[in-house]
Length: 450
Image 1 (cartoon, rainbow, N blue to C red):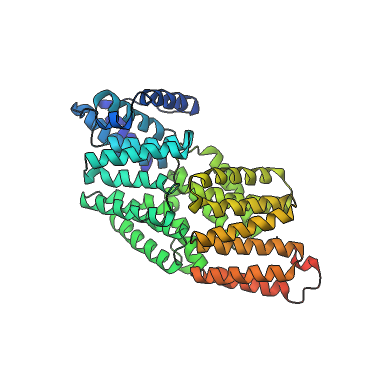
Image 2: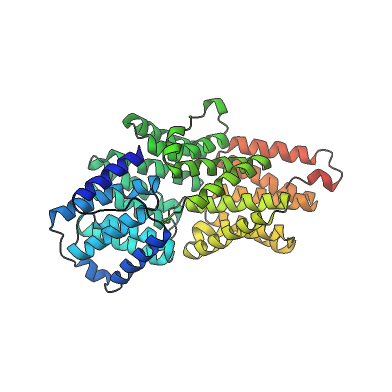
């Protein structure tokens, strides 16, 4: 139980003089962040690396506990997580460098990326890596690699950054940290899906990591990745009866798990073009997102913004509810900002959201240009999954305009690419839909499916 584990750890910290209030809100956290940011402004990377070693045993124990529960707080009590991070920075500045200081600066980088910018946060994660190199120990290396790689996925090509999670897995296993090792294996499996790796390989990655998690009883991590595993297997054509079950009891204990479950239902409904189910799950997803404030930047935020925006634009075109248009526009603005940090990872997503936004306001010439730019960017950066999706979405655009030849050309290309990705159920469904839509179609009404 993540809540109970966190409460016990906070109790231990209180017994050695590090007391935390029962709750925090945004009005508490932002001032704490600005205060520690001001303290850090007096330091260069060199001066931080040159800080004396931490010798106070109570402070070293506190740093160890703070480092171990940082990610747990992200799952169980998100408003506490930045406070724990800030405490680690303050203890380091006041008492010197401990082996766990690198975890603190890695987590601070994710916080900085959220509240200031991706480049500024990336600076702190790079410092965390340098601190780790200076005082290397496998006991903390797994955590540091994991946290810093989360932000690296916003800067470096995803296909290469994702492999670092395996390095984190190895370090964790070497020091006997099975929990962190499993976490990194599962996150790597998730990343392989977003990289556009063939779904047969994605399936193998999920199975290997899930077997390890079940062997050691770490259901908390299974609850986080199981929804995406089910989506991947469904796209690949695995029968509903053969899908692994969701870990529903953990979704009740972790709001983050519940959010991921809602997101994947929305995304799967979007992939299979079920408008009503997409709308229902999007309502749940956006409601949970509003209540679950995230103080860090982690890679899963990117596909959430992307598919949330795509779903919102589609729903708007059917309902004309301006709330959905605003949600789509917000996702487009966020993706444009991220694309400035990594054209490789986010440019195609931004162009596709841009195309959908133009489609919604009936700027058809601009929409067509943006669809083509999304397709070209996905192809250039080797995201076959996004190239397929961009072709399919462009196909619906041309279908709405009644341009049959263009529609068919994009739809058949999407079918080919989904097949290359290993998404057999999706490619078959798209082919059947396209052929049915064109069969005996004598009027534009037959194409009104977007």
